[in-house]
Image (cartoon, rainbow, N blue to C red; front, side):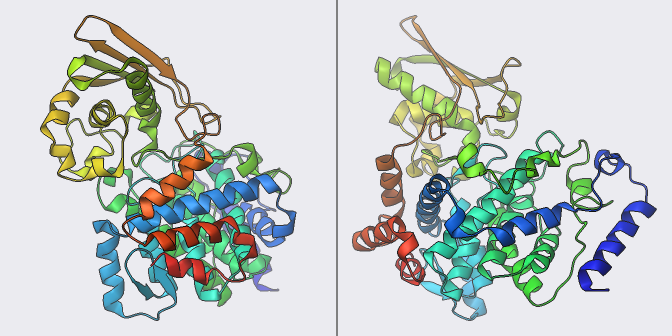
Length: 482
């Protein structure tokens, strides 16, 4: 009996011999002969760059540009710098670039620091469901790819492999519970693991092990939103993606039924509902990147707030509203939008990212919401603090986020002259339905990287990303970001 057969028999024994109280394990349709891990591993193993359609590749290049840009500026944030100091003190093997911090470290440490940096400003792109569950993939595959001297084509292939796995997982668990867990890490680690397994050239049985190992590495509590630990969730998932793939390469084992079995992934993280695994039926024929797309962020804060911010800015521009003319602002949002926005009056820049009154006051004051709005000094601006007192957010029970990525918000601005201006939007700016332009996305990269790396390096990096398929190794691109 080979290793796979032994583990399959052992896993089936666990399932059939132990009763479970969870909604998933009680289901008579819970698959036993074909575990989900095997479905995902088979897809990753068989995916090849030349078979990926043009549209997913185009989105992937843009996603890479976006993530590298926010990682460079994120590398200067205290959360990433603190982890960078720990990495530097360990004097690990210099394999991979730590972005924005002028040193190299081991692949594991670079993935940890760069993953944290990528999410430090909450400026990285989102998927249509579950926030930013794809966030750990690019920091993981770029750290590993630099050490392996991977080509641009291999990087794109690895990214698509990771995204497609994550996309279906996050859609599958929608409505199945998971409250309190941060999907960027609990789900994102599978994408990082899949992408790294692809870069290492692992075969299907080894990819199964990598993903099964990764299932024990998911973590991250939403109670830590508004602190440095939120971006750490992404750093840990990126590091764990590299680690799980390397462990599988070395012969490390895990339970291939870990997703479905009692006390497995679904049973532990998503106890109140049954995941819809039917979304994996078309994983070999349809690309989630093309079908759903990704959402690029114009504002460096929680994506749940972006529809309201965009709507407020639109009203401000269309009616030339000055902050002093505003008597009161009412923001109506769905319940799941309001839930994590817990700060009425933020005390720190990080808390400001999860304060609807602050964000709307900033949008009215500045006509935009930029990186400069999230320093501790910025949130203490007296004019802004006075204005946010006149902003209220409420839950509208008639509003719901949609499976198409819609996240509605209604904004009503009552002016001191007695007039009331209202507007409602269904999608946030940056969605496929309301996209940022190519020029806006390039400007975002430049704005993030400016002041951290030179203008010459920015220009060269953009040229490399634009012709990523032609790069025999990504090392020259990574070197520019340090």
